[in-house]
Amino acid sequence: MSWLKKSPKTRGKQDGAAASPTQVKTVPRKPTPRGWTGRGAGETMVISPAPEWRGTTVQVCGLWPYGVGTGAPMIGVPLGRHLFNRGTVCCDPISWFQRANLISNPSVFVLSKPGLGKSTIIRRMATGLAGYGVQPLVLGDLKPDYVDLIKEMNGQVITLGRGRGYLNILDPGEAGEAAELLSHAADLERKALKEEEAELSYLRSSDVPDDANQAQAIRERTAQLVGSLSIHAENISRDERLAVQVLQDAHGRRLTMVSALLTIMRREPPTDREETIIDRALKLLDEKHEGIPVLKDLLELIQSAPTELRAVALDRGDMARYQVITEDLEASLIGLVSGGRLGELFSQQTTTRMRRDRPVVYDVSSIDDSEMDLQAAVLLACWSAGFGTVNVATALADAELEPRRHYFVILDELWRALRAGRGMVDRVDALTRLNRQRGVGMAMISHTMSDLMSLSSEEDRMKAKGFVERSGMVICGGLPASEMPLLNSAISMSRAEQEMLQGWQDPPAWDPVSGKEADPPGRGKFLIKVGGRPGIPLTVELTEAEKHINDTNKLWHAASRTGVVDREAAV
Image (cartoon, rainbow, N blue to C red; front, side, top):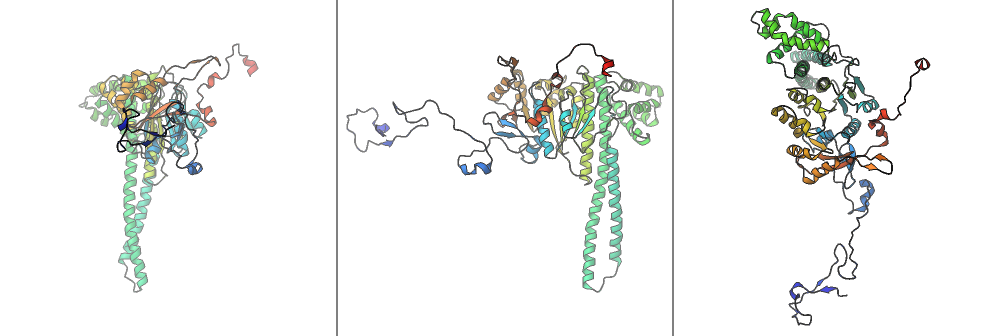
């Protein structure tokens, strides 16, 4: 076999034709990736993939240069394996924001059809972040999907529902106690300031000693006191400012929640005059009411028509005019106090107050899906209480009265609150916009983009779309083809990524061997998108320790039994 071949310059000439030595140029023959070409040379038609093994850099360091790093970031909570190269995929909004600097906002928006594992991937994130010292806060669990997880973390489970638990929206929570702590800290700083001012005044008025060492010591102490006085003054100003901010934030949240409940009751927001009356009434309750007020106290105060409320109501000194102005407001508050669509869930004192030092879940699963208004109202109330507690913790940490805590806030079933009435998007937006400044990571969960874009007004639809656009990352599961234009308008998706998401939403097949329905093809499969970067496809893999808290079919494990219960035998 000849191992040389003719150069291109000699092609087309007869084999017997003479060629000049300058015209003939030989090059060595080389094999292709499939082997030697030609008849009988052994060229292969199929290239087998090289065997791969996984290991740490300590274990495979001697295999250089054959070691290959993973294609996904290794910072954050391990979620599962890459769908193609089987590498470990680590991801969570707080780690990618705080440690990896991969996203500009510590938030994630999850979109997927029901039953494909949206809650499972968020539970995995919450579990891993708890190991990093981040407190999970599930502000409204409708299924429930997170109660077992929070119980395993020795967290606080707060149950709300008709006859099961109450949430007083006029309760400032821990804001009052935090304001007292901050004021007390300011008083201690002020006391220390006065003592050091007196010492400094004494040192400056005293005669300078003849001993050089003593004189040097006095000068050093004087300089130390001057610096300390400046620090005390800054701390006093900081603590007093934080105390005022905590109380004002609590007042604003109570006003927002009363307006939100009125919006749900009426299907439209209250008027500007009504909000002004509510604002002034809440301030009067803080000044004059003993203890924590409830909605009944707010109603009675408005009905009593004090001078301060009549002034902001602009009744022009006419009591009959005041009653006309406040009639609709009184009627709505009576509905909140005595029952109606929202029941009496918000009319009594809070059954269990939320703690800021442990994981928390609000279990609202007892509220039926048919009561969509009540579900939306409870979700908003839970979100308001949760973010109020986060603000208190942040203020105390800023004052160095408590250690700094980071929270992972989970807002599930976001679409339910957005559809509750006109103006609800603005209130949700106000609750969630400042998560980065408050040291809070956030996960917002909905089914599809259509849920966000089905709001009545164009303004609300654009604001709801902004929830997805502002998120640091978007995690998508199986979605129908009709969702792709809406999704692509918020985040850039390639054609291959869109086809992958569409394939994941296909229905499950029938397994003829087991005689059961197989798992859906998209269960546990997700695509992580950050801006316009290529997405990271992964499959979530649960450990044995996690499977029992991810079992959503517990009520179906035992077979149903018929027959009459013998109550006397049971006793």
